Structures are given as structure tokens and as C-alpha cells.
Image 1 (spheres, rainbow, N blue to C red):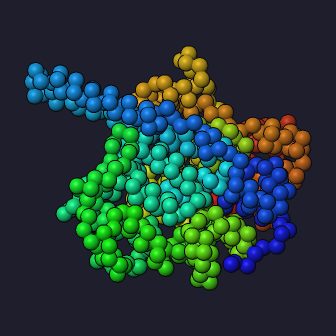
Image 2 (cartoon, rainbow, N blue to C red; image 1 turned 120 degrees about the vertical axis):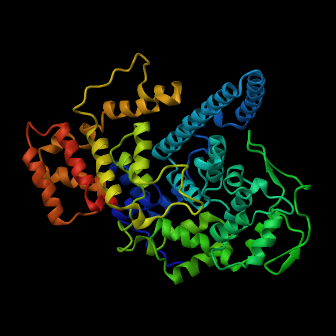
Image 3 (tube, rainbow, N blue to C red; image 1 turned 60 degrees about the horizontal axis):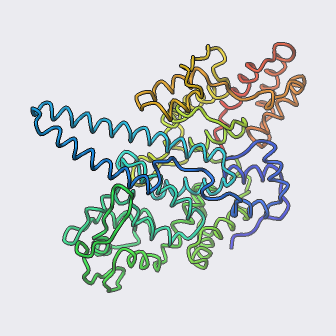
Length: 516
């Protein structure tokens, strides 16, 4: 066991836990969280009072609707083929291209809806640790729209991560090796007797469970034979095991002989000592700091194995440990782009996001939901920051804090509910218009709440209030005084909401704000 932190804790430690195990919060949320005490606060994170289905999925994401759509698509394909029989080759080719382009536009639209749905859930959830773990699993078991191309399968995988967010890693691994999105991403559906997919078996051992160097090439070859015969229904995501396509012969894996299938391989993997070290190491890096100490990982690996690979006890031990609240750990982790965006919205007490703009911001900052760069996931830590992404962070903070105060609102074309209506009801080709509307119509935060007028009459109190809101820790006297001077210069009749937005933009453009 890791040495435990004392029961008493400071409000800065509470804010640290809420940032790392979630996405931060407003000053009032932090105060309520702190009042729980350290242990009850950790309990509340690990056992949230929010149902798994608290945020309804897009209608197209259910298996029933997907199955019905599959039947409709099959009929459309047959009709298209019939129509093209009497066409010239040029006409037939043009018709097929138009048909495929329509399918691609629909897929892009649904991908954007899925990305918006998950971001909104992160922003509004009362189970922030669960969503933080869904993001962890999405990075660990990385798959992407770019290859899978069926948004319904990615969002079903996202739900799988949510169900197992803090549950059994072993059970989740059993599920993920038969997950349709993962199988498409790693080409497992084409793995059959006589032509096993060794790449899939390698990723399962190297990236997902054991880590490099904890298996042999012979283990990979034999495990690949065991993963043959699994097939996907592309319409509804159902996975079946076709024994005629499977290699049912005897295999030798980790020096054990047997007629193993995919589940048998996973069971063998979790008998290896390395299986208890990879996830504790990655969780430490995700929640605490890079380069975890060996003695800390040794302790967590023992706890993880003793708990039969359940995640919840592991997280409890981390969040209640002294190490988690060490001075060198607090406010020393570079925010990922998603953390940066969601945390900023929560600190500004924004309940809605300009959806198209947020998707664009993810692209600019280098982390787009459902689109990790490869099977190894994103590079974290210092990789998030370079000259371009830092400038993009400043620009994004400027837009979110100041809104479109100087722009004339864009006419809504009579469709009533602005960009969301545009996203939901209009065609994918209009997504660019939704982006422009977001840029022109974003109202920005409610500064009467974030920085009340009365507070603006006392520059020092105003700055201390804003610094707690955005940093939840003391700022150096030199930096603090610079902000106080700015507030003094605006005190009185000229200290408008627009200038408050500029002040917040200055604060969010500091190097310190890039750290969680």
C-alpha cells in the first residue's frame, strides 16, 4: 500500500483532486467538494450518483436503429445497382460516386455529433472520474473514425468504456478483443485459419496488457492463431465466432499448451506478472506524474493483482496517497487539450459550448475525440505544447472569454435555435456555416456572475477571486501584481464586461494556466 495522506486536507488539495480525477470546477463546486473531507470526496468520485444512461445517445447509435439502417442500406445498394445496369459506364460510375459521397457525408456528420455528445457529457456530468477514465481507456485501447468509418461502432465502444470505467481491467480486455470497432481498426475480422493476424496479437500483448519485452515472438504467432475466426456484423456491431474459420488446433503460449481461443489467450495473459504493472504505471502517469517511482508501482501492482485487476481499489489508493498531493505533483501536469477545454468551460461556469468551434479547437490543439493518431494513442505531457499549439491555446482562450462582442450577430435564417439546430437538421455541407455562426454569435461567459460589479471596485479582491477560480493556488507576487495593476486601471465606469473578458484572457494566457 502507498503511504496514506492525513484525513485533513486543504481546499487547494481538494481542487487538485477535482482537476486530476475530473475536469476541475467552479469555486463553489470546489468549496462543496472540500467540505466532504478527503475520504468522502474520493468515495463520491468512485461511486457517482449518475446513471450510465443519463445522457441519451444520438438516435442512430442504438443497435436496433443501426440494424434497421443496415437493411435499408442493403436495399439502397440493390436499387442503385439496378439503376446503373442500363447506364453508360461513365453514368454508372458517376452514380456510384454520388452514392458513396452521400454515405461519407452522413458518416462525417455523425462523427461530429458523437464528438459533440461526448464533449457535452464531459462538461455536464456529475460523474467526472468516470468520464476521465473513459478518456483514459479511449487512449489506451485507441481506435479512430478515420479507419473504422462507422460512428455507431465507436460510440458503442465508448459506452463499453463507460460500463467498465472503474471496473475489472481483465473483463474489459475480454470485451475489447471482441469489440467491433477494435476489430475493424486492427483488421481482426480478416484473421482466419491459415492466415492469422499477428499484428492484432502483438498489440494486445505489447500495448494493451503486458508491455514490450514481456512475451516472445512465438507467443505472438501462437496467440494470433487463437484470435482467428471472429467475424463482425458491420451493421449492428455484433461479433460472432465462426469455428470453421478458426484455428482450433493446439497452441503453445507462455509455455502452456492447449486449444486456446481469444478468451483463453486473455486468461493466460493475466497470469503473467507483467499484467499487474502496465495499467498501474499508465494510471500513475495519467493522474499523478510522469516517470513513476519504482517503489510506488511495485506497491500498486501488488494491490492491483490482489484485487483481481479491479480498477476502483487502485484509484482509491492513488487518490488517498501522500504522493498524489506532493508539492512537486500539484499544478505540474501539462493539460491535455480536452482537459484544457473542459476545465476552462467549467471554471467560467459555461454550461454550453459552441459545438462546431470546440471541434475546430480540438483540431488546432492536437487532440480530437474519437480520433487518436494511431493504435498507441496520443503522446502526452510535453508533447501537447509547442509554439503552434501554445498560440492556439491563447487564441481559443481569447474567443471563449471574449466571445464575439465586437461582431454583429448573424441572422438565424428563421430556424429558431441557432447552431445546434443547424448541426442536427441541416446537411453536413452546412457544418462550415455552423462554425462561422459559432464564431459570430458566441456570447461568452456571464461576467456578472464570474466577476460581479461590486468586486470590480476592489482590484485586489477581484484578482484573488479570479486567481482562485483559474489556478486554485497562490500565484507569484510579481504575476499577481501585474493583474492587480490592470484591474486598477479599469476600476470605475470603464470596467465593463468586455474588459473583464480581456482580463480573464490575460490570466488564461499565462504559462501557469497550461498546468493542471
